[in-house]
Image 1: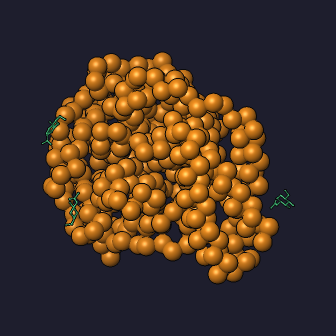
Image 2 (image 1 turned 90 degrees about the horizontal axis):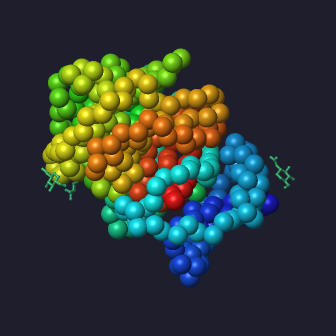
Length: 362
Ligand SMILES: *[C@@H]1O[C@H](CO)[C@@H](O)[C@H](O)[C@H]1NC(C)=O
Ligand SMILES: *[C@@H]1O[C@H](CO)[C@@H](O)[C@H](O)[C@H]1NC(C)=O
Ligand SMILES: *[C@@H]1O[C@H](CO)[C@@H](O)[C@H](O)[C@H]1NC(C)=O
């Protein structure tokens, strides 16, 4: 029972954390907490149905004690919520990345070093708390189904997953190639298998629509993310979400292997809209994400540190190579990185671990 109580405390603690840094009034914070308590109560009942040893084992894997200590410390030192500057999307300049906030192995344990996870950036009413998880179950390159959980706690414990299959075989036409996918309005956006096309998989109808990128777009490991020692296999295309919707990040031969950003209109079929050409060579970057129309790119510093070093502002077309915002890694490699405009967290998939970080704006 103690371990369950610890789990509750951790969830409580995480709840406070997730919300206290944002501009929610205290009253709202309290009601959110009450809601979360209800959620925890349900989780508790579900937990008790489970074999106790199994639960204990999972919690050990999740390094609950370590996270608890960290969480307690940070709560003690909790700073006042930042004042919202009148910047874009109500956000000021991004100045720091703190965390991890969540750090956990999944039910798949260490079987799959390549994968992706997060929340729908534009969920249907009632789906706000859902989390999705996709493992590249074939050769670290290919995936063919999406797993969903009703809450973060059920994801962490591996309770009650729902799997939606794109195809029964893997890989085949229009299944997933490479890890950097996103979920938006109940559709998954990803690089279609062995193709320079964008795939849109409708989770409700299980139908797939596609739109082609330019025919000289790198695919099938031509322009993957990389650093000096390693390439991140088959990461030619990176899908990202921000306050404005979905974008695809890729490179073409005619742009000399440098990064291109295209807005993806999430209509059916999807349509490519505005495109921006950067001078950032794709193979010098380990991943990208976008916040309110600004692209950020990361590079590998060492086993403990990834660094946001580059930004491209799609409003002003200004590039910067002088950013030095460090991300504290829990594992050596980050295979997937995306920003969730709803909670301002960065979601990472790092050598089979799922991790979140909080972005701090000035
Ligand atoms: C977790 O912490 C408690 C006390 O805070 C301790 O009794 C327990 O052994 C710890 N568990 C693990 C797995 O480290
Ligand atoms: C997915 O299918 C549902 C049901 O037909 C539809 O309402 C929705 O617009 C579709 N989503 C996309 C992105 O096409
Ligand atoms: C492209 O983006 C512009 C500006 O956001 C928008 O007005 C237009 O409808 C978009 N085009 C398509 C085909 O969705």
